[in-house]
Image 1: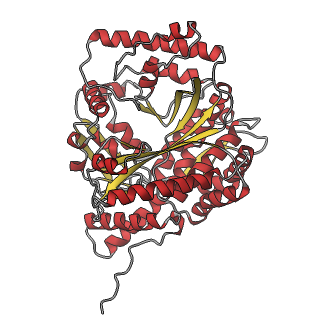
Image 2 (image 1 turned 60 degrees about the vertical axis):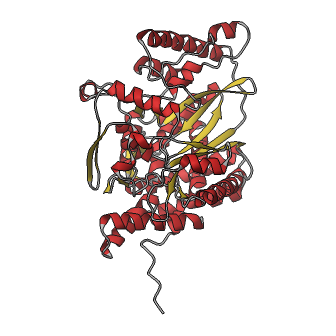
Length: 505
């Protein structure tokens, strides 16, 4: 949502006025598209990573305000809870050695932030869900002291009208309730932005949806929540349930959740913004003074503030973004699929795989979304979240016979998708050294059937077999994860288990 909002109460007229403004914004977007007012191709990408603050004992530290004061950089911001931070990397043009440059920028930024956190006896950990989080950590009193989070929490709670129910059945089952959206703060992710022209938007978004399950399969890193081993990537079910404004009766009627994969391939960015208005009531009906159609009539560029704010409260895994840079409007696809971590090398490898793959798939003469039902993409996403690197996915059959086939995720990636990603990166102008290095990380994960989630689960079970209690094993796994994360070596090289204690004497 980005902009600060002032907490307050809304009355009936606020919501009607906001709905009217949303319609005018949508008409403004339609005119901007028809008049071809959007930015020309720039091949720009951006990156955001959500982070956790953790003590030496592996437990969360509620210190983001104090840590941000010491970091004193606009690249770092608050996130939903007091143990969260977010780092934003400035947009880069895709090409050359951009991924190596990104990796170096991230290493510098995170090392500095980690040192500053260390002054408060905390450290930064990149992980999908912190294994040591307890239900008592995820309560409204631990939300960041920022008006927009308070207001969002109040509005989602009011819309739901009862406690949120978390019920995730994986390796083990977790069932509990929450009185706030605070459990959503457990989900720390990587967001990959790609600026695209309106003419390419639908192809890129459809391609991103088609590969969301593949991204999760190779990148899963969130197997634990509240001491339970759940799905290999537990963020999506947790995010959906912890922000779900629908009581059970509306769920039974098939009302769409605000955290949503989607239900169809699209033909324009307009389709997604229009769906947001059609399906989702406003959570934050805050109106701007601008009249977008008057601005357009005067030759200006409208901010479409209400449309942007509303879009920020619909949590698509691939979200459309409208923005303005240097007075010119542009569109971005924001990919929100991936968990944070485990290392900067892993994050950049995931990014390289994604940007290469969507470029190649978006430009295929017979696009994947014309050969695969949307329901199969949604089912792939669910299967990958449940099973991670061991998932089986549905994919279009190669050759002239058509149809789809079920295949191991690792076989699909190694045999078909890595060559496509390589071709896509070459089309972006990425140098072969970057292509080989970062796609090689994905290939090795597939060869070893290893990612962050598999390492966490295997190390946790080794710790229990060594006699540690469940809580002690989770804390030891988290501490070991932090140690290995700081080495920077990619997760497929990490030794499973805890290090042997040094002999005395």
